[in-house]
Structure formats: C-alpha cells, structure tokens
Length: 85
View 1: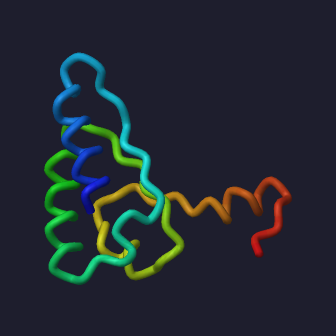
View 2 (view 1 turned 45 degrees about the horizontal axis):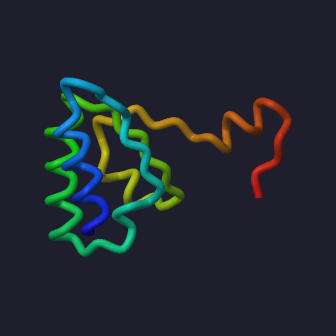
C-alpha cells in the first residue's frame, strides 16, 4: 500500500512537467473490499489526468472496472498463434 501511495504521489507531482502512465501488475489483488473501493475511487479520479495500465488475471478485479477498456491479452496471443496455458 505504501508503494502504491508513493507511485501515485510521484505521478501527481510530475503530471505537469513529465506525465507518465502508471503500469501496475495486480497491485490491489490482496486488498479487502474497503481498500479496493477507496483505490478504485482514487484511480478513477486520477484516470482523468493519467493513463493507467493494469494487468490482472482475476475476474473479480476485472468486474470492478466497468468503464475501463479491457484487453484480454490471451485472446490477442491466440490470434497470433500463441497458446494460452
């Protein structure tokens, strides 16, 4: 949680001089419902200023982001001949 807070603070501090996307690999997967709800609100607010790229394999997390553009990379890989395992 501290690491996520630091990354968000850095992104907010640098949004005018050096904006950058925030790339996350399942950062909230172990959060309880209350913390997940709070982080969802923060990400939605900051999503107006920053691009968030969020990787997950958990369907429950995917269901939380109803307004997000979701790309299933295993579908993309299958189209290129790769096999999802």
